[in-house]
Image 1 (cartoon, rainbow, N blue to C red):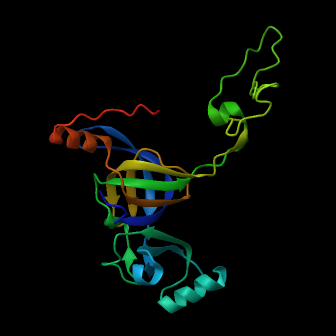
Image 2 (cartoon, one colour):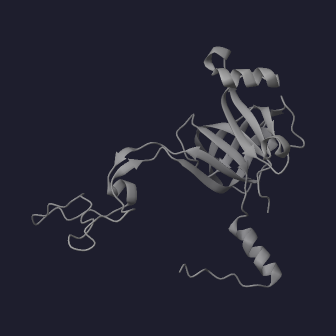
Image 3 (cartoon, rainbow, N blue to C red):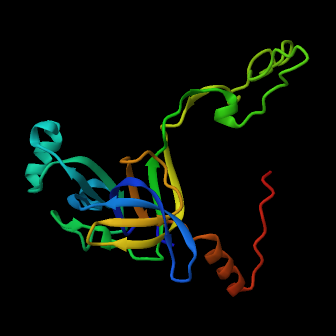
Length: 235
């Protein structure tokens, strides 16, 4: 299993739709406008202490880019971009400055991990944020959507850290693993991924090859080796 990713792209989420497979199966998919991305930097172990590839997405005018990024782009001989991201790799071989990465980097039936920022829900209560049940609305009950008791008075005389309460909900980095690429439209730069992807329409997402194998692969590997996979007790 690879330690780092080998394929990666930046994309924008366009929305969801459904497609029909050849056998007539209806599949819900998320449409991602992937790339084109440009390699803007290479990190090597000798110089930087790690191996990584930096790519840029969405070209920007020079005046809209901060000076450090603008100077780095001029030194590398690449245009300035609005979005820059680094991806750790096992090696930077096969990548060069100015190289263009497009949607055809991925293929149908390939497993990918998609990373995005979930929709912001503002300040949410315990029912919306944690799935708490509400209290009764009759017989004089005054505890309908309140969180209820959060501690005791005598012992421990405080509220435990990590107690689930109302909080700012959403607007957090989320990763959906092992999604299946249903179709790739190289001409229009679209990747259709089965299932949902975090974030709103036009939101920025990162696509990379799956780091961990899906369960069916693990099951097949266990059966091939003749072993029995047991669940951990969790203690």
